[in-house]
Length: 357
Image (cartoon, rainbow, N blue to C red; front, side, top):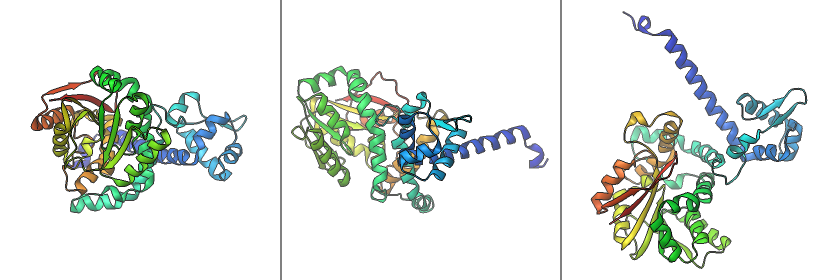
């Protein structure tokens, strides 16, 4: 029997439809990223129903491009169109995802990261063939800007409102006055948010990427918390100072070139009654359970950043889905952590853990 004769034509047709839908979704995301970059969603949210000429004037762009973009967003269902008035509108239910900068479900930062990551695709393809990876230094400032915007929404809306309250002992330490280290601090948004909320504590952020540390230091000054927050370039896998009451990593450990080394440094740096707070990706150790939109997104981000930057440093290359709960418990036990508690939060992106000696 020929291969053609064994094909289920209905399944084939359905899959072609799926591929078309996915390809279209990639185009929609690209258009949405352009809309974010140019401020078009925010212009729509601020203006209410408007013509393409109105939107172009408000956003400072050429009307012909505005009209084509609005048509694409209308066909995707992101924007509505009233044919009788020729006016486009952003439904109020769509504002949180597309126009509410800093909100808990805002996608603009992720869009910016994806546009920037496209610039390293050729190097990633080479890594597929030859091994190795793409180092952090290869990503332009737009990538880090997008990452800050994306994660900043979490820190502004969930860190002190949900995550810290889910860990009563951590909250007590922060309120009473603790020495806190944020490992892999990036541009410092988490440490600064904690310092604003728990001023009795003192904070230091460590990151191996010097440009992020420079920006974090500037952010602390701008936020008025430089008296209790400082940042330092340091490879946490090599060593950390000791005597910390609380050490945090926020979506860091799965990126690390040497996750065991980082965990060992954290273990040694904690006071005997200290607590390590680990926020990391909400994923499964089973391939078949990491499916659907989030599974696809996580695998893509892993290839475009998380896994490849670790491999570029000769590291473990855990990737975005590599630090599921089973793996964290396994690695933590190797360095001596014995008490590992998963905090009770509901979050599709992340799990939250408390680790103690």
